[in-house]
Image (cartoon, rainbow over all chains, first blue to last red; front, side, top):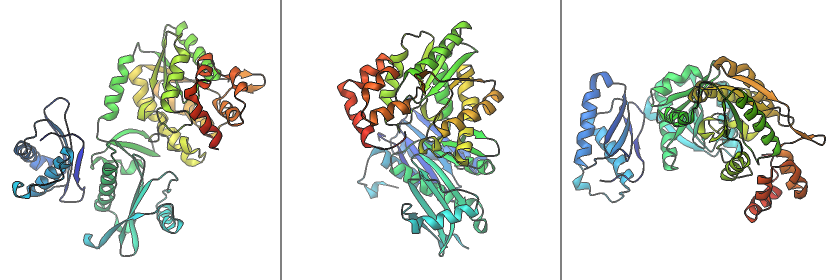
Amino acid sequence: MKLIRTGKAGTLESSDVMITVKNNPANKIEINLQSIVEKQFGRHIRSFVEAVLEEMEVTSAIVDIDDRSALDCVIRARLETALYRAAGITVFRWEAIR
Amino acid sequence: MAEYDYTVETIQYDISSERKPVEEFLRRLHLSYDADVTYTIVVKAGKEIAATGSMAGNVLKCIGVSPDYQGQTLTNTVVSKLEMEAYYQGIDHLFLFSKPGNRDKFMGLGFQPVGEYPGEVVLLEKPAGRVEEWTAELSRARTGDHSTSLVMNCNPFTRGHRYLVEQAAAKAASESEDVHLFVVHEDRSLFPRNVRFQLVRNGNSDLPNVHVHSGGPYIISSATFPTYFIRDAGEATRIHAGLDLHIYGSRIAPALGITRRMVGQEPYCPVTRAYNRAMSGILPQYGVEVEEIPRLEIGTRAVSASVVRDMIRAGRLQEVRELVPETTWEYLTSPSAAPVLERIQREDRRH
């Protein structure tokens, strides 16, 4: 999946996450995580986000994450939405989305 | 009250019946509802306003939460909504005005401080790191530990500006230093940004120690100094001028080794006068000496860009000739200036 513009999804409400993604000119994955549960789950969130990116076949992205202690399913939903917006995809193959 | 009882509404800020309650709400929090807002939301608990926030271009401001509903969550609601609205408008660099007491709350939402006027206001930005990137780029033009600087809008570049640049260049040269000349980036003046910039470039190309830079988003911009562009000479101007100068002192001056800022005395505009006054109070704190230079006078009048615009407005273009350098005159009499001149004559605004 190629990111052609900035994609953003989510909120800063408690238990949610706001994710902004855009193409990385350095052609790699860069994750900037800010989380109120960074100490407890920072490592898990990073690897989870990396896994979703890999699944979506994204190899070049800057991912800014403002996490308010979101569950994995929420992080996935927000990240996928942000990626689709960044890729300019508006027709979803729902059955392909986990 | 539980979270699910809140509703979020967009306010038609130009309709006074919608605007008034927001104004009233902010006043109770000792905050003002600024004239330049372009988008406002309120969070309501039942019929009562519990929180509000606004956007002016890419600047989030006038954010307030009622003491009855204090706590993180409503601030988060407001900022989320504003951030998504900014995203839909295609804005990817956000600023936020806050009282210093709320700085940490917004830093928890991904904003990083750009600069602070202690006790008055702090300016934050998102994504973090933009101001560091910008000043790192700027510092590539650094030529030493001492230099002189000028900040100008040049709307358009006149012999008054040229006189000031010459004074700065001569003074800097006598100490074998350089001059960094910043042209205001914000495109809210009658002469378009690229024209202003080009006229400054062309008008100073013979001065080898003068470097022309764009002021970017951090010097007299709608983020650092919004009242500069709305020409409001009240309390807000004092605060914004202070903020702009603290950012200049803490971010810009160290990047280029600036130790002197020269400024022309302002004969006409109260906002610029207030700015100059604040300058001599704040910049020395950062090791930047401020020097005010009397304006160049031709005949009995101080040469200023506003006088030039007034002459154009009155249809007396020929009289402009002696007030501007040859390079600016060439532009004014070229076909490409015609639409700009027309606009000046049509629009009755000061700036």
